[in-house]
Length: 398
Image 1: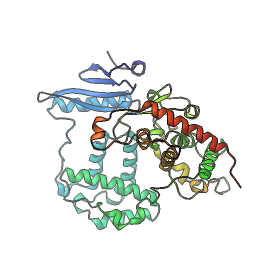
Image 2 (image 1 turned 90 degrees about the vertical axis):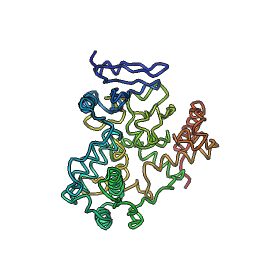
Image 3 (image 1 turned 30 degrees about the vertical axis):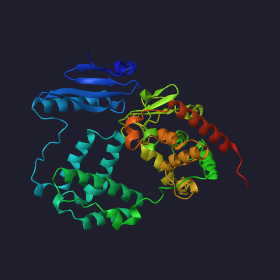
């Protein structure tokens, strides 16, 4: 049997997870939630192992098959595809370009597609252009500070992204013993201006009404899909990247199941879709509810942020939408924080709020309390949606 998109789309969830093999270990795994994951099942040194190749449809059948062939080729040579390959050059000849290439290949095995894309663009556009031929071991903290400050001079938010992804890349290099220290460690303390300052931003009731009505206006500037995505963050209290990547296979009636491959904490998460959320969820024209213009992938978290950070202009050069819709600086994630705060104000217990947000439980309770709280999540998300509908329809007091 050879897998096809039609065959995979027709696979239905069962009470227990199950796997179907194409051949030579190339497998599709179907969970009770309906999420589908490509895997390579192989045996090496007498041990049976599994390699995740990506969740469908975020990872296409063609992409998964290519990953499978590469991994199977390594296994045939006695190499575990889950073990990072040795560096082909000596550390003193290893350039930043070499490191970026190896690091992005490493991310392909585990990172979400949107994260991989963002990391690749950031490292290639802002790090590679400055240090392409520099030896990795020659990069010092003063170099890292200079790089981040240079980027911050033109785009503060981008500088934070450079710091985040470059620090993660050099952590990878440190674990591979390619460097003796991470030059980006502690840089945020040296350049406090690049550290986000809106971690506690919560929108007021008047701001919620203004944001809702502005984003709901069909004549408002910017992508309607991205504006709708922002509204769904507020309704569902989920992370921006998770909302932007909603796939057809993740939605079953009133429930949206975020597969662990897309969840920040690597825990599968069920979200109740209230009538308000269902009403706003875009109709499908491809495997994703929020597709990119080419319909080959979801729009990604960045598209949601651009609605707030960009200042589109008309033909005369006049700004037709101010940054952050004219409000004090806020981000898509602040909508999630606002929803959680409003749930608390409505009386929702903290434990249920954590369940709605998919926060990992700490300590012993995290091991023994496996209650998914579906009934409670449904109850409180319905309360929040009804409260939100009343709030946004109430005239603002003058």
